[in-house]
Image (cartoon, rainbow, N blue to C red; front, side, top):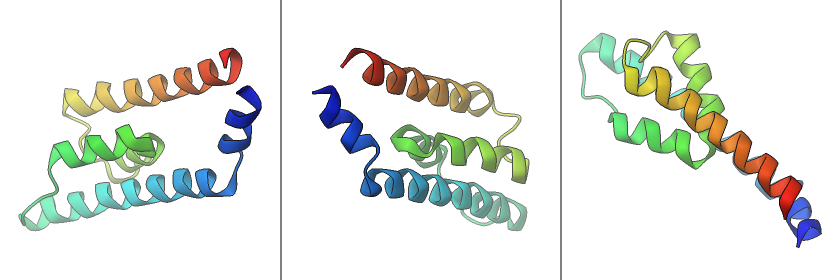
Length: 98
């Protein structure tokens, strides 16, 4: 089972997924910041956090820092790093114990 998991994690489709979801999440944070400045309809906070949860936490954290966006909202200041930490812990657990 561990060999199958390692094969999956190191497979090109999985790595492309992680790269793609993080780039997409980063751009969503930038687009939301731009819309906020224009006072246009925004991307929901739920969507931004969902993108972080499904693998885009590095992109979310990078977008927050790069665009200085959502840095005053506790839900994001604490939530995004916690999501990233949980994803790292899950990855280590899967690697070590399966």
